[in-house]
Image 1: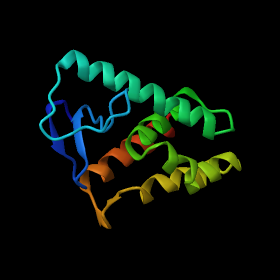
Image 2 (image 1 turned 90 degrees about the horizontal axis):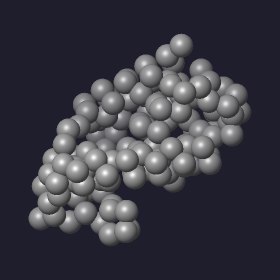
Image 3 (image 1 turned 60 degrees about the horizontal axis):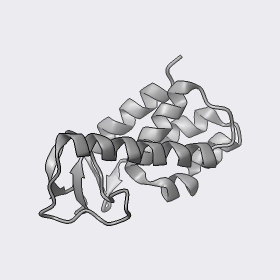
Image 4 (image 1 turned 180 degrees about the vertical axis):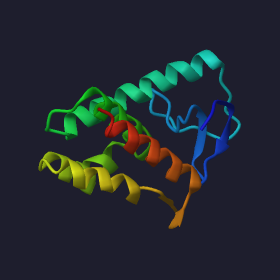
Length: 133
């Protein structure tokens, strides 16, 4: 993923802008035709990541290493807080099954029932970060 200053449709048709923002901090959804500045994109990214990290801290009850928190924040930024909350990945982590949780990253590579190469790459990076010493 990269920076896009004009709204576009992501691979599953969700209007997106900046570094991956789909909803502005005021709650409004991104619309095709929206534009922003690089500074606004950074501001929205910081906001979105803070929300994702808060969701991880709320959902995952087991202590996390810094790299694990970073990987799960990236994951949650991409899939959403509700998806994390109801995921087998979170359930396994909360049960102390780190090995099982790590395997779950590989299951989150689909968009509209098809494997998306970008998600395969993203999950591999998140899994690598999660398992970093």
